[in-house]
Image 1 (tube, one colour):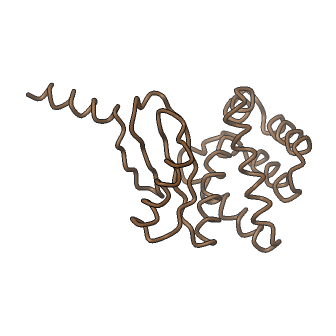
Image 2: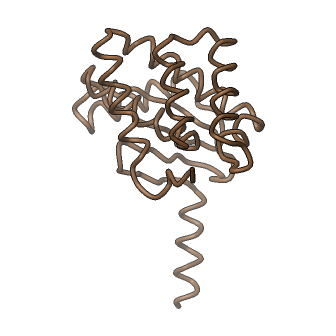
Length: 184
């Protein structure tokens, strides 16, 4: 079965199904914690990213690999079964999208808004606290901030809330300047 999860919002649909199931089972917090762990594993492991994305591995191989990871990490049975279903349906490569969408659904249910902050250097606790206060004032809701370091932005920050992106990175300002100079 082809893994064409990039062609539509497959991740969002699977996340909604998982959220509904976790909510019915009163396990939203546990499943969200499992998905957060999986997100970190995906970020840290090149081999795991290859397993998820490569068409060289069959759906069965992906299910076995994710099952082994779930067992080793002590993931909840609901999360483990979901990983098996995702793999069996040929959608393992959609797992990162599912995680992001699930976290957004969970945050919305708690009345908070998820925000991703990307910076060139790690943010200090004071900077993160200041960012949270600014977002709280701008959005009118409590933000749940996840941070990521991307040295390629050179400086400044990028803040993504839902589908909105605020880009105050040095890289984007330099690119804008370069574009303006080319047009002149």
